[in-house]
Length: 125
Image (cartoon, rainbow, N blue to C red):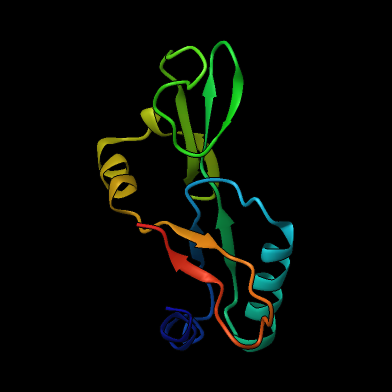
């Protein structure tokens, strides 16, 4: 995906961004560091984002990932994700954007021993 997007997005003079929707927060900060370094050193992408989703329970607050119900009390949560640059509750998005959210490909960042030997983005779907 990075090779394809690098060729495509560098043809434009602005208005492009490549979103990596992670589905949940990244457990290993070193994996994030390796990935950002790899993208910045090996590609010419003008802008990219790492966009984890998270949930908020009215009783227990912040929860990792997209959890429709709280694992502690089973209350309904609000799921937050990035839309047009901002983190907003998915249930407040318009119908078209909610459909787009369901079709997103989610990725996970996995640390690798040698960042030069493998791309650390894996499709988690």
